[in-house]
Image (tube, rainbow, N blue to C red; front, side, top):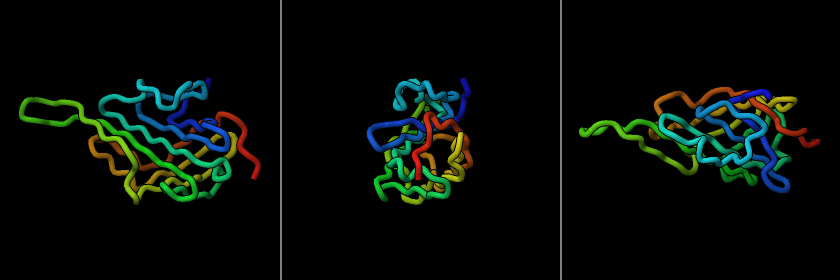
Length: 139
C-alpha cells in the first residue's frame, strides 16, 4: 500500500477530510484521521474538512469560508530553565493560512501557505502530494 504525507478520505456525507502530518507516512487505511498516535513532540498535523464539491484542481481553501474547516496541531520542544519539555498548540490555523488544490487526479497535490506553528521547529508551508482514497467526485 502506498504511503504519503497526506491522505484524502471520506469523512461524512458530502465531506472529505485531508490529513497531513510529519508523524509518520499515511495510507488510505488510516482508520481515524484524528488518531492520537499521529500526535507527539516535534510534529505537526493539519486537518482540512471540505465539502466534496470543493475537491477540484485550482480551488483555494480558506478556513470558515464555504463550509471549509482548517485545524492544526503542532508540538515541539519548549526550552525552560529546568530543561526541555514538549509543548502543544491546537486549534484553528491563522487567518492567513491557505490551502490550494494544485492537482486532483489519481493523487492530490496541495500547496499550504501561511501556517505559522507555535512550537514545531520545522517547515510546514509547502507542497504535498498524497493519496486520494476513493474516486474524486464528478465536477
